[in-house]
Length: 414
Image 1 (spheres, rainbow, N blue to C red):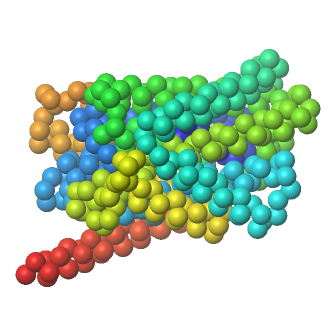
Image 2: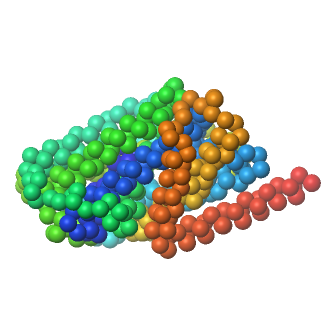
Image 3: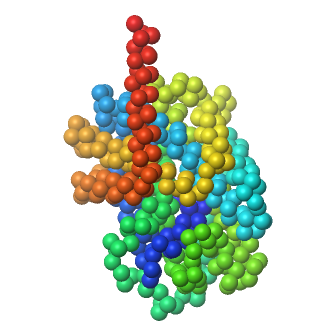
């Protein structure tokens, strides 16, 4: 859950609100929750059946079988090695932007802050998983208390006559704000990347996923209603960076605005902590399987975690945080083709080949969630515009690299 509630909802909220009129923006958040819930069926079934480090990497390798499994899993790792650092960069850039509410930072100073945050996250994660678990509990407590304060503050002033959120069609909203809101829900599946380190994964992985989505959906909807009961949606501009801070400032004064800003920054740090933790296991799993650079399979000699994978992702995230803008990073991180759509198809192939008798968790109403998930992710993929083309180019490049490396290995063997 601390993966899901990062800087995302705070910087995405004004962007989404500015897209709509008469309160339609709330439906975009509902659509994001629906997308996460449908996709969670697939993650839960696969995660409970195959609790291994790397999550999707193993799901694709097993689902597509001997002939295509190595190709699909390699393409996923290839995309992840580029797009996971973009996720890290998005959180770091958003952190620096929000910090400028308290300290006036120019462009260069913001970049120094975003890069420095990636380094801090790296240092926090350079330790055993048991210690990381204890740090996660502390960070999650900060997340819950902060969002609860925002919700309670706004709802005490809520005026139902001032809002008209639910008077408009669901389908009128999804065309504009859905890509941004879905970004704010991403992370419900993070537990699958840590499958090899989870106790009783056949039960805890599905439970973790569904509780996370339910909890975060409730928090997001209440937070939107709360903030918009104080700040009129007509006032919100797409480049408004400090919506929640302004909200608190209007109610309790400038000091409260500063306090909530500090708490939001703590949430951003917590999210980056969880994101990097999960993604660092993916190149490791692929390398261990002989399907990525062998050095990534090395564990730390005393702390027993994939430290080279962690170093790589943080180093690239550091570079991306210095190079890119936040809005462009958000649009570019939907890893749709190989992860979400590819994984859905892989589950169908698995059920066809192996049946369902040995599954610890079986999705409800199969195959409806699979069909819905594929349709939604295709819609979102097209909605990213030019980034859909960029994602396709990355996938095609990965395809070429896979076949070149395979040919190189064959030549060495002969």
